[in-house]
Image (cartoon, rainbow, N blue to C red; front, side):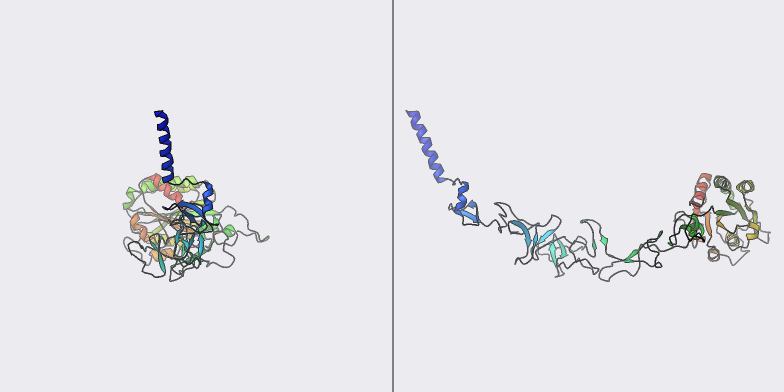
Length: 440
């Protein structure tokens, strides 16, 4: 009996608690809201809280589905959106990279490259009234697009005068340009460049990164590339058919001008070894010949001699085996080189009229006349004498590169100014660079 009474008491207490506690709501409780609204909660008085899930940013499309910054600030038609205060401009919810700007109803990328910061919470506004604080960066938000070169972010992609990923580098606006002759663009090596946008000042007057035609002279006349952009590599046209045809084997005449003065005693052995090895390597081509020119002794009125005219590598190497630093030379390297380049020694050298000419000067001290015996010859006159069918290269100590820098370079590829060395292997590598082209 006592057990039955206890059970009844527990049951009564349970009924009392249910009556006084929160109301258990069934699906039929939606009937408590007017048509078009949905009950998403009860208030403290036990009345239903009815919301329009088509426009309520805290219950958008369904209960407890919020439209929060930075992606959205409004609910439109049951979908989160970015809207201005008057709902005159409405955009879909932003994608995570962009930020909803409530003042304008736009999804905007912060201007990562503007460098102007702001903080509306701490009252740090943007100085430019045309900008709003977006993600802590002062950003133009009045997008008029497309992007133009004016120093503004016209398309609101976060970059001034350019496009690209954010964060990260971007491609600056560029206006195409080409200064080559009509019809040569996109032929051979030629292509357009661009006038790069400089911001509010407009486009640069310089055409950057274009490639205009280059005359096919010297080594460029046999490299298999259409350097002058006339749709014929190496300019070999068949006069009868008018068609471009592959070039026949070309001839190369290589002249060494080697200083044999006493100061070369430390390097002459490496020079001789490297030159002879190189001549053996490439000289098996019967179209390649070699010659040797040397500054002479102080008592020689000519100051320069053709030690060996252009010949086969076999004869040349035999002559080179007898080259040594005799300690008695005026070292007029500019003078000797100019005589080779301007044709003064053509009779002795015997250049073939259809050959590519490579002139290689090897010395260790300044290229000017050591004893001032000859005058009127310097870097300017030498470089002006280089014919279009000739490649000039020098091998010397780095301080002497300046004696030749008007017409040679140690940084071009292949280089035409290379360091003198006591190591024959290094010297041979340098010589190979000079003729790193399809001519051989």
